[in-house]
Length: 87
Ligand SMILES: [Zn+2]
Image: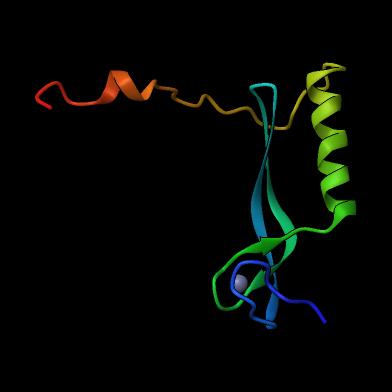
């Protein structure tokens, strides 16, 4: 019986979610990844085989130069630079 690690709830629903894989400051975002979601707290659980596929795709893109279907430009800030100066 599956139990949520965060809240102990035992009810899960099958859904699809966006998964962000990050390694050494490189990112891969995959949409519509099948997962099980805790119906109480919303924590998402992905299968090992699914994560392995995402990792393989990440390596194809970042190590072997495969072109992703779509690329995003993501704004990046340092927190210390966006703090308001009147603190
Ligand atoms: Zn939960």
